[in-house]
Image (tube, rainbow, N blue to C red; front, side, top):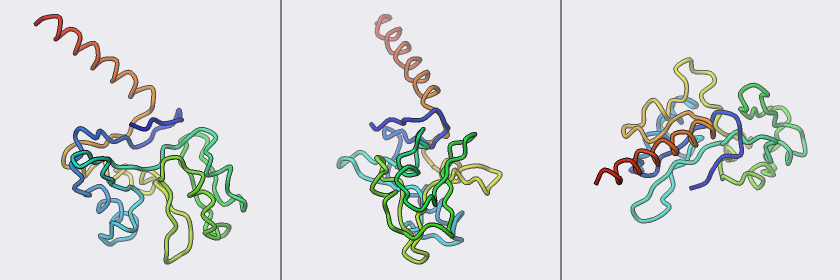
Length: 165
């Protein structure tokens, strides 16, 4: 499982719950474009194995490599939320940001020729639509610290359960 390099919130996928239904992609594309088109989604569902699916989206990295790689200063990172913003006037679709992203979370829109990535549905007061509409609860908006704490709690629970047997 790939981990985040961030202190910021990001959308995390639990591959044990994800069934690869792509609802997250449809919810995202509809929220962003008004149409159900998985190719315009800013979250990607991938099969890591025959029976393992996972969703990938921007991890809001600290010192984001995509921002650093942009030769036109078209990408900026919100210091408070970590969300990466694309300045459509500056972005020329060179895809250096795509190459710099370790998570494969950036795409170039074929229509606008501009970079696109998850902005956690900043324009929607309900928050990330992929999280809201995931039928299996496989997605959550979290931070690396909260994920680590949850993993520690699960480990302790497993140890206590095993000790009782």
